[in-house]
Image 1 (spheres, rainbow, N blue to C red):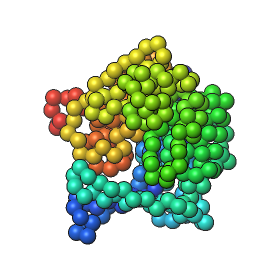
Image 2: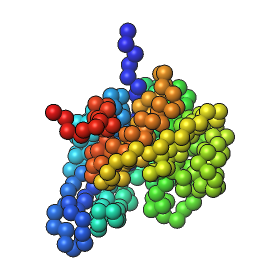
Image 3: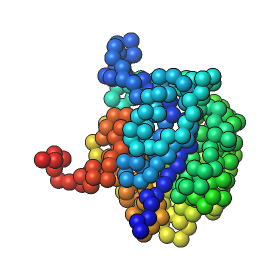
Image 4: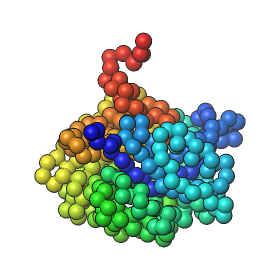
Length: 317
């Protein structure tokens, strides 16, 4: 009997996204594209494209943006558990691409449906089917209810036998001057897998080399700690073993969402016979692949596409 595919459940906010089609001043940008983005749904899409089972939990408004997000996630093979509320709208963000390398993102999320995510919005029945439950610091920072949601979900997921994945994914605009450290550390302490950029790790445990910061985080309880280093690759440790993975050289078009793709690549090999080095190698490749397309999630590869990353010729005939 074939074992069921790895099931990754993500919980968090997704917003509508408006972007100017061509880089330049906003007052000269006449054409804009409509899409959506959110760290947790980005991970869910990437997981599904890599052939794993993905579920996404959130709240949406009963509006066209909510309809768009739910429809497109389902089209990507993600199981959507996001009631649409009549009393709160779907959040919206605008990405102004001033140049090909410079962008400003503005958010309209106050009073949005997802900003009110609470523990009761995460069903026990779904957590009981999960192999991995993935959370981020964005959910923790949306408000008191959402911090309770993140902490309670982590505890219930562990009790249900799932591994808890936590990507710090610090966004200063979400916290608006509040100190996130205690909230982040509470989730690090509950997690099995922790992902952090170098600046994020330093925020929690002080400056040091990636290996030193990872070891400090590991001592708080996670089974594995992964430091994302961008163009310098990535580092992972389980407390005894360690692995450095160099970055994959690609022509970068857009780095937004690459960290989420990286996380999905790592989680897609959780369990089974894959080693920590296998997971880190895949994560680095998936993150690099995502950098070669515009958009928050659009560039995440399928397993077939990922195999072509190292091909000598990019054209498939």
